[in-house]
Figure (cartoon, rainbow, N blue to C red):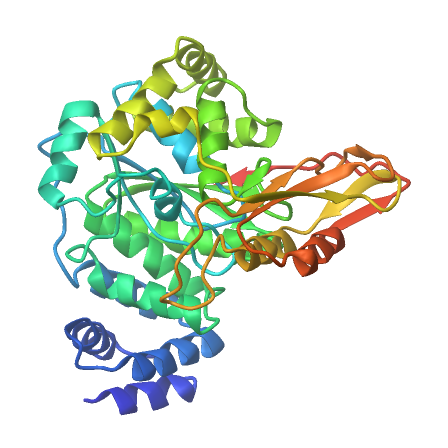
Amino acid sequence: MNILEIISKKRDKKALNKEEIEYFIEEYTKGNITDYQAAALVMAIFINGMDYEETKNLTIAMAHSGETLDLSDISDTIIDKHSSGGVGDKITLIVMPIVATFGIPVAKMSGRGLGITGGTIDKLESIPGYRTDISLEEFKNNIKEIGISLIGQTKDLAPADKKIYALRDTIACTESIPLIASSIMSKKIAAGANKIILEVTYGKGAFMKTEEDAIKLSKIMSKIGELAGIETVCVITNMNQPIGKNVGNSLEIEEAVRALKGDMEEDVKEIVFHITALIMKMANLGDNLEENKKKIIENIENGKAYKKFVELVAKQGGDTKYLENIERAKYIVEVKAEKEGYVQDLNAETIGKSAIALGAGRMKKEDTIDHTAGIVLSKKIGDKVLNGETLAYIHTNKENFEDVTKEILTAYKIGKEKPEEYKHISKTI
């Protein structure tokens, strides 16, 4: 068996067997297979797909490419929440501290930005001093002591996924159901949670462009979760426009801070409350979602939610004073409407690409992110707009941003008719 045979087999649209997948994962993790060979195979998978058996075998192989974490000594219920990615998706940063206020242990291993989507770890690293690369022992201790830890993917947990994840981002192989499913679920299996809630996004700002594909991805991940003995619930959300108002790393931390203090945008609130209420149900803290939501409001209003986030930041070395005075980019520039009407569409993909162009994401694997760069949206779908009114604000340290201004204008479709109400949550699987 060798990698060339495996590449050519998948290139020719043939299914890979368990042994071939395990060989690739093991040898790539060890460094015996080069990045360009791995890229060829990943591209072949992207183009020709994988059946369920292949996807399952890829997931299990990646999950066991390093250590697996046992958290059963902490609690019978360990919750993890994950998003399949989106533009402005800061939901995890808000949900997880709220969940921890109810005494539900939160063990969260997150990824970096992939394509136009922002990564939770990149956002947390915009907080000076916050350590995302702590040891597994410290990870466990933090969960025991304060009930929550949010870290990056360690070199020990699912290392094969970490390598493939970074590779996919730089070879335009992000929007693939088997690669997304195996990436997400391998991390979840390795990280030790026994209950997982997955926010599966679809639309212009997501990897899955249609609701149908989001449902397909959800069913595959639920099936893999069931196979691994992990209770898995998927919430399908609409990502045709960005979530909330802020897009960019420190900007999204800023919005998360406001939300945890009770100032939430309506779309953020709808998704945060629904997912948190479901997690409470999964943790046997109440089957009535509306009653759970009342308890969520109480823990936000009494300050427990924000206090838990501050506690998390402090525990992992972050500067908690920064949360009250978040750094701004050198230039903050208005993007103004050129006509009057209602916002009928706001293309999340265009906004995501514009944020990357400003420095908020990576074009190449080795790129450094400008944590202060991004976009703050003043108008979203359904909003009334006057000619010359501000649609958005560009935040950047770059001298030249005129092209981005023009690009953001193309993201907005403004017409005379007010559109139908935008639906944020599609369904729960």
